[in-house]
Image (cartoon, rainbow, N blue to C red):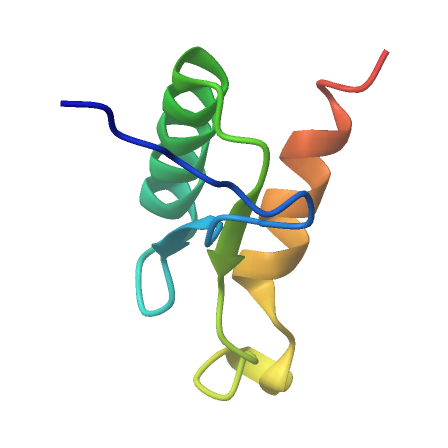
Length: 77
């Protein structure tokens, strides 16, 4: 039996997603680092990180977002 598989040239799979809002900063950063490592190892081209807007943070500042961005900037070389 012959099976024909046709893949669109512009097909883009759904990005892998991790939701860390409502976690403490230390736990959120650790989970994002692990998810990023897992994505790189498995060849996932995109990782979407949901951090929330900071509505429950002091001063409504998005603490998770800023901490994760700060940590990821340490990886850029």
